[in-house]
Structures are given as C-alpha cells and as structure tokens.
Length: 471
Image (cartoon, rainbow, N blue to C red):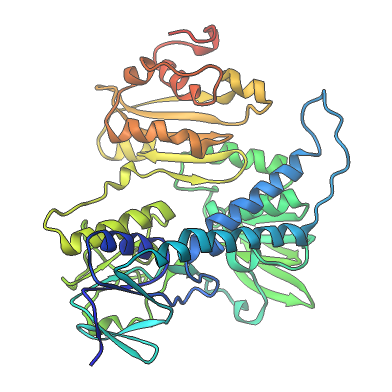
C-alpha cells in the first residue's frame, strides 16, 4: 500500500512551487515529486537554474563590460578586461544562493507538503511511482516543465553543440559562435556573448527576428544589434551541420543561396520541448497536442478530470511568472468550487537584450485581425527627454488602440528598462484604459516611463513641437 496524499504535484519549478504553496495555504496534504528531465534544472526548475536568473546576470555583466569601453565624451575610459571564468563562477554562486533562499528554504516551511526528489511517473489512475515508492492521491498537477528542442537537421547527432544550459556554463571563452534562432533566447545569448567579445552570427528561419513582435521593433532591434557587430541572417533554411576538429560548420540556404558558416561554438535556440514522454500519461488519460504539450482548458484542467497542469509543460507562453500563476490556479481549481482563469492578453513578456523589448496585449495586426478599427501611435525614444539625459535614445513606444473608443488594446516598447516600463501598459490593457486616461495621468519628469504618455499624446499632436511636461 502506498503513501496517501490529497494532491501529488509532478515537478519542482515555478509552476510546481506555486501549486505547492497554494495547496499548503489550503491545508491540503501534498507530495511534490521533484525529479526533472531537464538536466540542469534541479530544485527550482528552469528559471533559477538554467534560465532567467543566470542568463540575466550574465547579460548584465556583458553589457557593463561593453559599455565600459565607451559612453559619455566627458569620461575617459580605460582598457577593461573580462575574467570569463570568474563571471561564470559568480553566476553559479548567485544561482546557488537563490536556489536555497527562494526554493529549498521556502519548501522547508510548507508544513503540508512533502518533497520527494525522484523522477515520478503515473502507475495507474490514482498512483505515482517515485523511485522505489508508490504514492496514492485523488488529484494531481503536472508541472514538469520543458527543455531545449533540437531541430531535425543532418549531422546534429554527431557534433558537440550548445543549448541554453551549456551556454551558461562554458569553461573557456569562445572566439566565435553561431546562434540558430532569432527569438528571445537566441538574441539574448547572441548579445551576451557579443558583449563579452565573441564574434556572433545569428541564423533565423523567418524573414525577421522576433517575428511575433511588431515589425518596427524587430527592424530597429536588428539594426542596433548589427551596429554592435552581430551578423544576422534571416530566411535561413538549415541543411547540415558538421564538426571539423573543434570548429562547428553550418551549411544553409540564405534567401535560397547556399552559404557556409564556421565558428568555435554552435548554439541551438530553437524552442522548447515538453517533459512528458516519461510520465506514462496513458495510464491517466491525459491528452497531448501535436507537439507533446499537455492540453488544458481555461481552468488548467486536462482531459482527465482529476488532473491539472501548469507551466512550460502546457506550452506558450513559457514565462516564469505565468507558470507560477498557472500553478496557483491549478491548485485552487482542484479544491475550490470558485474556479479561476487567466486572460493571457493581460500577460506581459520581455526580451532582455539591450535595449530591452517588452509587450502586452494585441499587436497592430492582431487587432485588425479581430475586427478592431485600429489606431497606432509610434513614438521614437529620441522624443523622450530622459533618453537624452542617460545618453541612449535607441528605441520606440508603440500603442495600439481602438480608433473609435480610444481603448488601449496593446503596448509595445523597445527601450532601456522596457521590462520595467511595460507595467503601466499592462494595467492599461487589463483595466481597459483609454489614450485619454494615460494623458490625464501625471508622470514624473524626467523618466523613461514618460514615453508612454508622450506616445498617447502623439495621437492628438506633434510631440516634437511640445515643451517638456506639456499636458
């Protein structure tokens, strides 16, 4: 006879932890089965171990090093040096501290939750096998996350390539790197290593980088990255990869023309694949989509009425914060009659390049596709006084609004600290604010956040002819 629980959570990342915390608050006897198929994601999951925390730390190191070479004319800059091994070591120390303080220590305080550090799989409708233990429960939450997806390309199984995990833990500094993928992950690693001093080439399958974002943002960011020396190729069709000694070789068609690329390292940033294949989901009747992600309804419930799922294992958007929200909602909905849902159009996302990209709500094309008569205001950052004050006028703010009602349905920002600036846009989309509501809101001067107000004012007037703080 196995150990009995009210709830068993499979996973140990953001979605699983949020579910465990909510279950603990509800007084639910819970087991968190914490093994993970993502190699580098131990307790805490992807974000703290091989995702957000380490990558943003190294991005910051790279940007500080890059900016130290040049800047304000009034400052005489010296010859900075990068200790690559020490940067990796400091990143590892930060991850270790966060893993303990934000996960291990938190878990120890959850009186109703038992942590079992084993890879779990369903044995039958009401049991999970975890190591040599059998665990019994009436309800389950799947939050096992996802891992790097490797494209099906000739030769990939014969070479030493990188994913996000390996790129965060290189022991030697690479002189050159090819990054396959021009979305958030690929661009962040491309700029990180370019700032370190690596010669970086980005290969993107679609006709532009960040294809889901506004075209004005994609075009501007590509221009900025290329100014920093990153080579970017779009409309790339990979044909074969190989290795000559330590040199990685990529053969591809670029706009239907054959081209060969060579570098010390090859990084695949080509999406994520779910950790579902070992779960024995047939035993509980949980359905998957065509890409192997767990299918859920708006309440995070799977096709099996006693099983819920949350986080990257259910697919896009794969964000740490949304995984946590999904996990908490899954636990709530498993035990409360009042069901909660998520409006994904109110969820912001960010790309942590320099400058950053942040977005919430509908794009121009999506709004028009939904029959909304759309009006868009685009404000270049050189019209924001604070941008001149800090010496960085790269970027823009685009506001998508209903032409008839002036309701804001989307906000898209390319700017320094865009990930911090987007939250006023989130509130605007969430609470259906209008252009006039933003204009009527007093903003601190001088700030970059004033850019959203100026973008709103641009619907009515030429802001280039305004004085500072004009209402």
